[in-house]
Image (cartoon, rainbow, N blue to C red):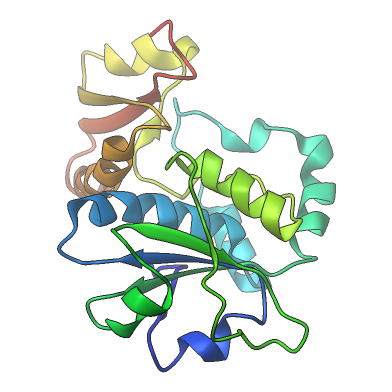
Length: 231
């Protein structure tokens, strides 16, 4: 799957930022904290990404496997109003590799990595060279970042779980899946605020996809331990 994050550099930054509400991750590829945050930024970008009709139809066809948590059950009454709100404002989630754009460290007063900054749209759609952006100082989980962007951009997006090959388990089906004697089941217990969990998600998904393709007897699953503390 292609990334929803827009990659910017010295040549493209000023051409893009200023036209629409933009959240930018300034990172260094050698920085472990930056790498661990990247999956969270990807999830943030997927949430604010405006999909075309073809993408919407493709997403609708991606069904979650049996015994998994059914995301579509959530708030059908708000579905239309939520979609309407989300299409009013286009929000850009972008990243800059500062190793390749070293002048940005001084220009945006970057004192460490990762640094996340919000840039509001301007009247003429071009960024002021003196605009250093507003630095994000909240928690690094996806929910907090979505809330921050919504507050800044005046949007009402809800965190959208990315399609995954991992089965999301809930208490009522946990034993039926985890204790199935005909299958080998590995369960990851995670928390949405845990950055390390987020960085591990792509690896877990890749392994799950491998076994879904090669051996149906092996199941990789996950449980949101913050939401389902009884497990």
